[in-house]
Structures are given as structure tokens and as C-alpha cells.
Image 1 (cartoon, one colour):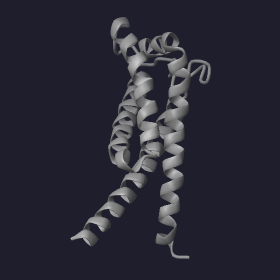
Image 2 (tube, rainbow, N blue to C red):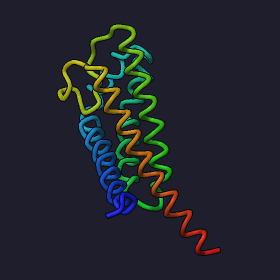
Image 3 (tube, rainbow, N blue to C red):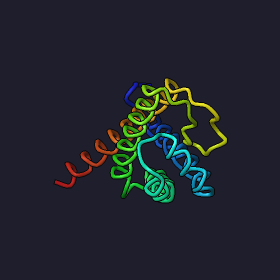
Image 4 (cartoon, rainbow, N blue to C red):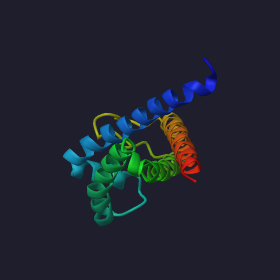
Length: 151
């Protein structure tokens, strides 16, 4: 089997992993926004009032774009949003690490990660960005080929 023949399968697996990660990350935060707000505050980037808004809106956004990665009509937009969020998360983790903060990131709820291993968090998010790029690249190739046929 040619390596390129495996690309659609790799894209599917990547899509399921990234979508699953975002949905699984969103659910505990949706069920306990107050605890997630405390995690947001612990990064010392935004204050309490704004953190409460982030704690309410961000998990629902993560849920929508996680599911959206499985919906062909909005896959590219969801992928772009996921990539952007992951880059923001990487920046936040790097900043907290550089400032010596020993906090729970709240990524998958407050009880999932009692302390933070920043190097693993950053690596995990970089791998998720790479997986999202695989999905988006495949989606752009499929749509480009379809539009070329239509012309």
C-alpha cells in the first residue's frame, strides 16, 4: 500500500482524536464553570470578572468546534479555530512556566491535572496542532480536487 493511500485514514484518526480531545475537555468545564474560572484566574493574565465570562463561553466554544471538526460543512473553520486556540493555550502555558507558576491548567477539568507539567502540556498541544493541520490539509485537498472537477 502506498503511503499516500494511508493519508485519508490518518486524517480520519487525527480528526477523531482532536475532536474527542476538545469535546472531552469542554464537558467538565461546562459542568463546573466556577472551578474553571479559578483555573483561568490562576494563570494571572485576566481578572475575576473577565475570567468568569471566559469560563462560561470557552468550554461551549470548545464543544462546538470539537464537534464541528466532524461536520464537513464547517470542518475548515473549526480546524482554524482549534489551531488558534491551541496556539493561545501554548502561549499561556509557556508564560505560566516562565513565570514559575505551579498551577493546574484546568484543561480537562480541575481534578484531572492537580499539578502542571508544562513541557508535556506544550508537547500535547503541539501534537494536537499538527493533527489539526493534517485534517485541514486533507480537507483543502479534497475540496480543491472537487472544485477542479467542477470546472
